[in-house]
Image 1 (cartoon, rainbow, N blue to C red):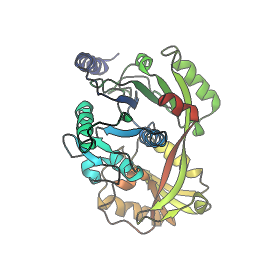
Image 2: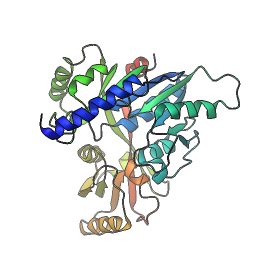
Image 3: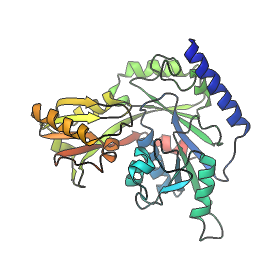
Length: 337
């Protein structure tokens, strides 16, 4: 372990120790969804899918999120269940996307998820004498949020690039040592549709010495449809044979490109930015020029990227591909049992 890794590990250990010593409990069940690395493992589609399934099964789910890079401070509603109450800049791109996708499911933003949860209980039960016993909190990106007790920890691991160089930040992408996989109650290996079975089997063999009890489920992030920035929708078949120029600023751009290719479109070019990139008008203008040079008919991005473009002048031929989290039904049975 190098000096920078060691310094990170000291800070990480101190934060974890202090947080666990002062851990708080919400009066309702909490399920955490998170990862052990930085970057994209598909947490947001997984949180959307789990919340939607919980709602179908009679729970009253509420998502608690820190709202990474969102400007709004303190506990506040991103949505009460009927669409966004904050814009993308105040909510953060991922909570804003969840608010657009989920109906009947409140989303609360707050750095302190215990405080956010208590705020949600107070606000959502203000008109009733007895809070619903079916309230279920889903902690978005919560694997390292030790300050809040959770009843189940769901750990997402990307099949394509599970642990990078297996080094801690800032040298590698690990948020904590691999031995901490032991805390997971359920492990989901994501992006398995883009990965050979041999690689998945090898990954499971690497995971098992750290955690021999957790159930492991393979999951895919399947394309659902295309959506224009004016609200129009197009089925996947519509893309077959069309020339697309793609761009994205997400944690796993390779997965985005593979998902896009699976629709049968032709990718004339692609431009990538860092995760959570804040686009400016000149970026869109540059993308449009590159798309025209490559003779692309359409410009396509991810659903998460589209949320960051709302205040910019977008070309009429700009669309987003939406993704759904696809996993065996037994995952939901175990997660919500």
